Image (cartoon, rainbow, N blue to C red; front, side):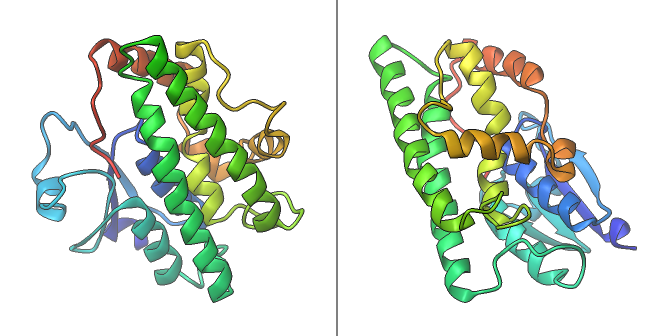
Length: 232
């Protein structure tokens, strides 16, 4: 029944659509995934996200929910008794998780996009340095959020794991494209171990595209001088 009323509009390479797929799979919800051509946007997308005209969009019945972080919270709240929880139970811990989710998108995304449109060695080095700095801060955040457990969410994958995990395949693809180490296990050993664990989780394996496939897409985007994102 849920599958008949749930649709997700996305693009296969979008980290934001990937995290939306992660939460749907994590909750065990049946849904229809619809791949968007952002050069020829569907009426469904334009009708349900007329302001930004971006993916992902979750369509529940006749209503559209936009923005990936909003989608994660909506699914967790609307199906609170279905599958495992995504956000922490404590209001304080939920607030902390939301803070770090915004940090991840504010610090990771600009440098990922920047590496697709590199003009000089100096700008390349700047984006790589920014990623290193962000990962080092997230290394410390993981200590506090996980409290020594396997994931940011504790014993099982949760909100922050999805928010950061959706970038992992892109980070590894960009390492191949830029020939630079971005997620360096010698500098962020906790994140490196976390990456190994999260890549074994079913909802992550189902949602993440292969590094090889993203590398091909990334090289095409770089050749075209990619400027920004049509996803959020």
